Length: 267
View 1 (tube, helix red, strand yellow):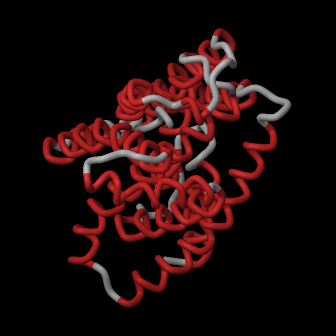
View 2 (view 1 turned 180 degrees about the vertical axis):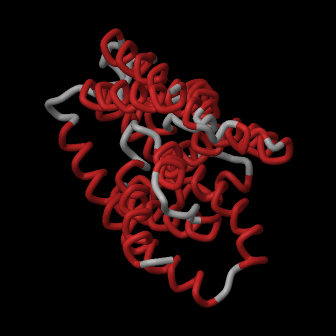
């Protein structure tokens, strides 16, 4: 794989992973709409590792808090805020893990990797993001997260297995519908991405180990580093922008891209 291809792949993944515009949809479109070959599972795992480190570093205080609560979670006795945060993240991750495993075993994941599906999901869930952002109140904050809300957002997150939906976008939509402020809705979405990326990465790694070689490892290392910096920049940009701007710019982008994709798919 050429360095340009690796760079393009890593930048696309890094930027789109945390913006509400669907990273999986963009990665599927790259080989579908260009002469570039499909990047394969190994590069998928690598760029996800890069974005994982980026979000962990950006929210390092919250990640450290949840990490300190893991022993409490393992003992089955929650005594601290860190333990409760770890429990909420676990509960929020279970639905997507179950549905993801079902999709993988049944082959549903491959059936949904089409330009038409991505186009429709871009538009439909772009409208959902717009409506929930406009109608939702801004009375709740991330520290007020509850187990009930964690499960609720986890169910929303599971829908993001459909390419084009956007994991961050649909979780933000769910959080805004519950009344979380924009910045806090985005924060919950980012924190929920950490165990989800770890789970999906672990699942893909099982397949990658069988086919990996030195060249693949080298390309993956380069892609991981580039995606780390791209994801970090995207996180800084979005979290600062949310202090003064709504999610409407992302909605407009989704509607425009979705319209173009449907035109391509049906003509």
